[in-house]
Amino acid sequence: MEECRVLSIQSHVVRGYVGNRAATFPLQVHGSEIDSVNSQTLCRPPGYPHWKGQVLSSNELHTLYEGLQLNSVNQYDYVLTGYTRDKSFLAMVVDIVKELKQQNSRLVYVCDPVMGDKRNGEGSMYVPEDLLPVYKDKVVPVADIITPNQFEAELLSGRKIRTQEEALAVMDMLHAMGPDTVVITSSDLPSPRGGDYLIALGSQRTRHPDGSVVTERIRMEMLKVDADFVGTGDLFAAMLLAWTHKHPNNLKVACEKTVSAMHHVLQRTIKCAKAQAGEGQRPSPAQLELRMVQSKADIENPEIVVQATVL
Image 1 (tube, helix red, strand yellow):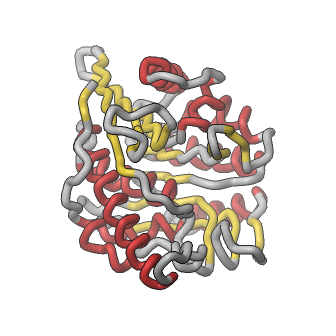
Image 2: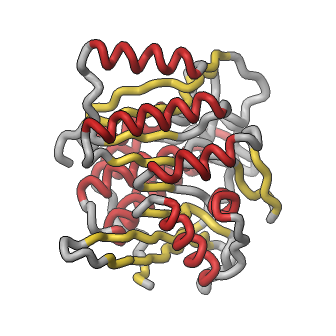
């Protein structure tokens, strides 16, 4: 991967791999220089019974960015954002992205619009509801790549997804809002291969010099892992950034490498977690922390185990 510089604005945990902790290592493995701003710093990722930490305010974010400006070190190729709980903080992120794009018209903004997920078929938000209009009206319009799960795609579009055709229509709606690349990272759509598989969908618009626009759509079927991991969405967004940088006009290859790397990380994690927990015991949150460092080779050059189908 050609060297590039990434500004990553996400949460941070002291223990485990979530947010900036999940994004930094894989991006560094791929040769990126990454500057991290921690939207919040917690002692542990979700799943543990107790938490302590601090949350960065929008004013504090502005102060940090102002310092980068004053030192003339605010030149970036990518911005990556994830979990945020405060709408004023999110609006400040948008202001920063707009300013960076004025300086570098080729800057790519990768946004994981973390808002909620589905559990047992029912979706629920785990951020304040007042963030949704900020994402819809301000964030998504300036994003180049977005990585929502199915529930988040439904929130952003206002449309339910029950079939693949409805998912493709939702991705078209999201394209119309701004981003040229949309990846629905997980869905509850039925797989022809059975209930053990999870469907992900991607859509990328490529603009040609003659003004024409070509849209590539893909579907991926991934083997489910019976465990509650955290940080997988953060890792997915970082890996997609890395592989789209290397394959900017080939969504199929970028997603195959992203999802295959994810597969190897999760399989290694669950194998180690089960060994630590003991036979017949369900692994604890600590045992299920992603085995990131141990997966360096797979993150850097994954064996392709998930093939994408071009639709």
